[in-house]
Length: 382
Image (cartoon, rainbow, N blue to C red; front, side):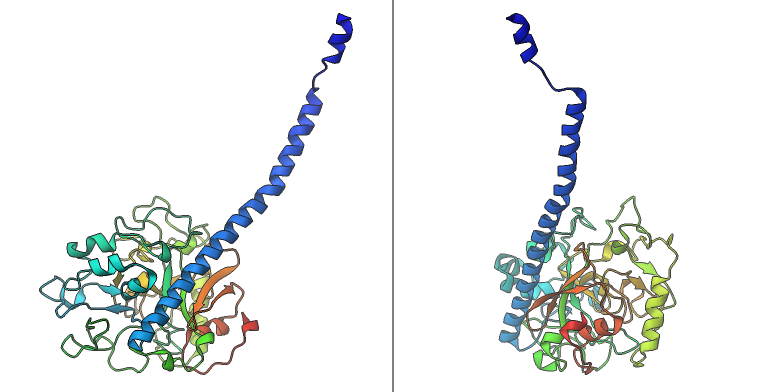
């Protein structure tokens, strides 16, 4: 009797146990990519929704003021001696004027319009993170420059400078001083770096002659490599999209209408040696990319705008000889990028959000970035 009970208490053999473990491992290997894909799909949907909110906010702003927001604005009646820095200090970036339209009235009301955004009087605002401005697929949790609150969504500055500058929709303002400034939201704008140009802000949807459904308004960029990060981006590294790379082979022949010069520039950018390091020096650093949602400056393109130059998820390259130097400049190759596989989300001027693939041709990408150059494109082109 006891012998039969002993025989009935048989356990797993080692081989059987190994087979079960192997089956479980295979199932996990099969399921994990599906789970990760589902999570990324949810993050991409959230990113799409953020851009839709920004597009709607821009339209609501336009309904009130008949213009699209400028890339940067000097706030208040004075911006010089009173708040420090004069005409060389930071101005308010385009998200500041959209705050009421993205349900951020408390921050908008807290903004001290008599002081520029990088002064202590506005620290409680500019250090506050806004979820609508952050893409959940960006896995860098460290702010590029603490304590400034960053952003992933940038305004469209336009296509390559050799073809035509300021062809985008979130543009540099024109007026020359606060005494003759155009008031927007009761705020004035200043400086006269560029001279008169019909492509400069302020303008409304009527200026988008190529059609609002064919012209980009906002897209996304990954946050710049954190200041002090021990891992400096390289051309062939996994974090190359967070870097700013320097090449002096970018054309600075503005407004020449030359597609050949634009191709030459992106070719020079893409052909940098794989071991090339991004710039991380103080004042010329990769951490400038989107480091502060509230700060803007005319030629500091990398902070709050991008250019339709290099196609999505390629390198960002700047020319130290350009007007803006290592901050962007009128001919900066400031590239839209993301962690979404295969492309980037783009909010168009009609408020729609579409996914543009990395494989889009340069000429189509350039055309999507310009508001009034008369290019003919189809949705099947991207």
